[in-house]
Length: 293
Image (cartoon, rainbow, N blue to C red; front, side, top):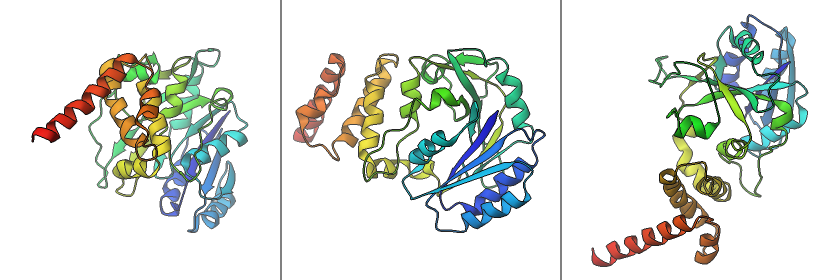
């Protein structure tokens, strides 16, 4: 029923912890798909060792280094189970994670609008101490944007999605770029689908200085086409409050400017007249401050 999918790149030193957590699952009714995004370490040899010692199915796919979003696209082409759960290579599962997933899937399996589960990730630091997190007091059926702007819940979630739906939303790919934020897809799904947000955490994530969170601004600048697209679609999403869209339009403009110097062309991509006026006044005020400072 479920594929546990892990995209990885040169993370052999963390994969063993994830494998051990899979071995401890109280339910073995899953398969593990690893998409190796061009690792140059001993990932392949390590996965071969896992396969010889696991009592569940392991599928290993190697591709040239193209980025996590392309690894996700590769996974979606190969997943055959009705549902899949993405667990990053530096995270690991709680012992009863699979059992919790199966229990909760019974509530959504026949729904056409609820396409999966969202479980809050329990983040810990290098000392194993949990980061403060706004925990859910009760289960909520909502889209990603509804959680953020109506329920005021900003958190990282593990997603268990219906494979048939996710296959319809592949990540866009830009030549020469190896990263795009995952919110591009959640933003596109939001208008049509919702998730059942559960209170139980099934995944534990460790904050790492070499992780995406610690380097996100630099990564976005180096992948400006994907970054500007993400902020473009957020600023033009009328389901997001206007106050938030004002910050998105500024981010869009900054990243778009890294590869597009045409002012009018950038302005044309802003669909809201209010946002066009806002960004024009924003630049006028910035110019005035520089002139008189």
